[in-house]
Amino acid sequence: MKFLTVFPDFERFHLYKDVGQVNFFAAQQLSSQACVLAYDPKLSAPPELDISFIKIKSIFKRVPHIKLDLNIVLFLFFNAKKFKYLNLYHPTFASQIYTIIYKTMYRNGKVYIKLDLDLEDAKKNRGIPDKGIIGWIKKTVFKKFKTLLDVVSVESKEAYELLRSRNSYAKEKLILIPNGVSSSELERNNPPVLYDEKENVIITIARIGTEVKNNQLMLSALSKCDLKNWKYIFIGPIEDDFQNDIIAFQKEHPNLANNVEFLGSKNRTEVIKMYKTAKVFTLSSRKEGFPLVYAEAAFFGCHIITTAVSGSIDITDNGRLGSITPINNSDLFAEAIQNVINNDIEIIQFNEIRKYAITHFTWESIIPKLAKKLSNG
Image (cartoon, rainbow, N blue to C red; front, side, top):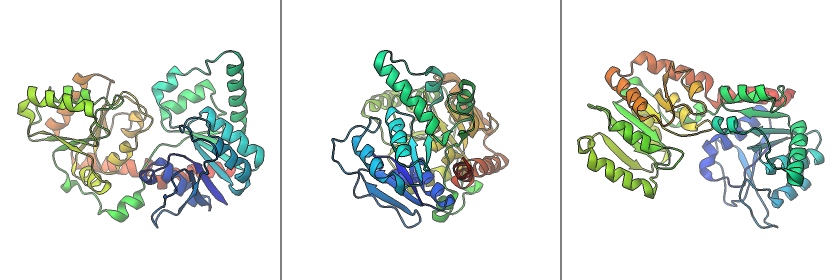
């Protein structure tokens, strides 16, 4: 048996994100071979990840990943029966057509779609707005798609309850599968994280300066804080436009020059070192699905300060193990930062965060639920 994930833009860094990890762990649980369908002909996985890559043949012109790709349609038409399980991301029109093609060619195959759903977008989306023939086609395809799906997962409890209340998908097919990390991978390559290694460091990890990440809010919040002997470190590639914000911040707040750092891009080993060092992780986003950095930060025992995006309630256990502030409110974000600086993070909280993350947000604990659903569904 084979488990196929269709992800045409797969790159090497996806191996340790949900795309690669769900593929590997689900296949392992289902006694299947993990396979990924992608365009890059040079893809390969390390020995510990037994993933095979299948190159998409470019018979037709390649299109953006959210568009219907005729090359993928052809592949599924001729190869569907080689794969017991088909895994897709996002309920796009393209994913709907791929599902219909696959199920038409292989009735006994199982389709699993991971929604990767942003809660705010889900609240706004009330259905297919198109009218006329296009709207009729989309609605007809979506209706057929829903009947053919075997399992559909959503990442956060709030989004799960929203979809259930709307009857967006059959309740017996919808499950809650949060994003996570591989404890075996992290523990194999790194010594266990210890509370004594933690320093007075607050980090954020992202593409710094993008519209979604809203790092301007962080700068505004920092300008209102007394950081004392704490450091606040931005990690990740910095957008060109955000460089002006950094220069203005440093000019206006020279007193924070030794407390606020911008490290730029770091490799995975360096990022993990920062997780192990930091006591606090922050996220100021305007919107998210369920960011993988949540699970990584919690696994390394970081108190999480975050805006109220998808997954914030889940990762902090409704604020018990972190702080949730309204989106776009720099005053309350600053207050949350100041609170941890003034009161520190005690070892008991560090241990609680670690225990909670290992129980709820590692692939080893998450994927068996998915595999069971696919086996029985």
